[in-house]
Amino acid sequence: MHPMLNTAVKAARSAGKIIVHGSQNLDRLTVTAKRENDFVSEIDQKAEKIIIQTLLDAYPTHAILAEESGASGSTGEAEYQWVIDPLDGTTNFLHGFPQYAVSIALAHNGVLSQAVIYDSARNDLYTASRGGGAFLNDRRLRVSKRKQLDDALIGTGFPYRDFTHLDAYMAMLRDMLQKTAGVRRPGSAALDLAYTAAGRLDGFWEIGLSKWDIAAGCLMIQESGGLVSDFSGNENYLESGNIVAGSPRVFNQLLQTLAPHLTDALK
Image 1 (tube, rainbow, N blue to C red):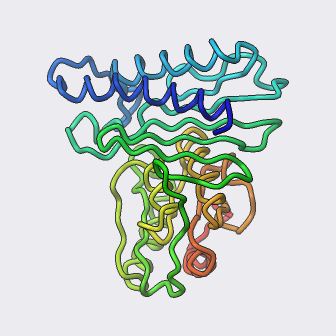
Image 2 (cartoon, rainbow, N blue to C red):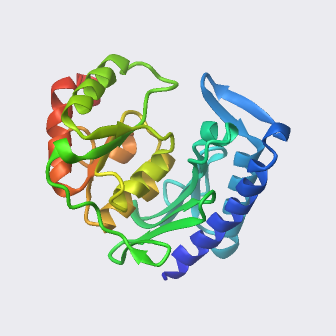
């Protein structure tokens, strides 16, 4: 395992311990609303703090981009930047719905190079290194072999705080429901992408995600033989937050299904 990936795993497991402990005391947690339908708990903050501390203890010159504390370090100039979501799926976590994860990615000169997604509820560790493949615990991951969209199980995320593109999304969802074997919305984009890398989902799409939601999962899918793009088939997904991912055959059919519903703002 790459030394930097090993450090990220250590950080993710430390955060996972905090999350597991918090899940056993949900009624005692302090929760605040960042904005409508977007919550942060003391567990998010404690998990993020220990992740950053672990990473910077090992690599003090690296920059950080984290969901709760934002950017730190020389983010515009740093050779390395860690992209962190300490608890992706906070709403699930707060309701005791066991679909949430720690997500940590490392970008080297702007290119994703290491990734960890840790599902503490199941003790499942997803890892990836650029050029080194992706793994679930010790098992090599490959995207699914399904070739047709009508046989595919597709993941998505509903708009929940910004409804600007709700009409376009509902049109996309309508077509997906009719053209696939099923659509799932578990509530953690990081895990949805990890599941796509593992072949549990055949593809995924969502509008308006943040970089920390998807950075680790994108590398994981690519290292599992899958494809990732924005809605126009380009590589602007980390910046736009509009993402399509999946096995190669299903990926292309997803793009074709979404295309009729793209507004200018989504292209």
